[in-house]
Length: 232
Image 1 (cartoon, rainbow, N blue to C red):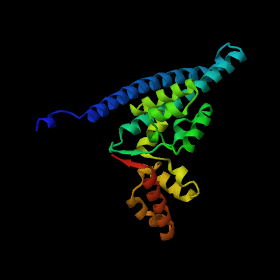
Image 2 (cartoon, helix red, strand yellow):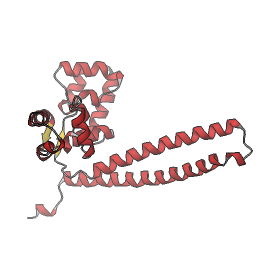
Image 3 (cartoon, helix red, strand yellow):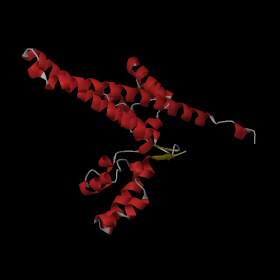
């Protein structure tokens, strides 16, 4: 009874992470508003260039600035979408294995990734401090990997890895040979393996798929879960 009055450490950490994400959303939203305002101002100036006595170089530079800020705006919007998506995930108990080459994706880690795989360490979750200390000879790289691994244990990582961790691999990777299937799933806003479920497969006949195809897709889904899904 008394223990029920206290929040678990995991629950407190989840609350903390959610607050950090919410603060990040607020920050990005304000930045997005600022960028949109700047873009509108720049665009208005650019359109009215015939009424201005600027030289060609100035206008070309302004055009470059306009393109630059437009691209930055798109990146901000993508970051905002990712954060919102992560906040909307309900089942915090589901996690997926992350491939070691995704965790250490830079070229400078290629030899270390190869060495880990030779020692049957294919996923981040198979790493530990001892094996990193033992297998990574280069001191600088070892320190980098240890720091990244420690951050991973604290749930601090790139957004792509975070999404991979809680939603699994992209369906475009697992079902890369089945373009029609991918298109149908995209229309239903299903982008990751974690978005799939048996009900979705059972309804595929309505989209023109044969039983044999559906069973094949379902078997791939079940195999992926057997190999990559972690249930706490």
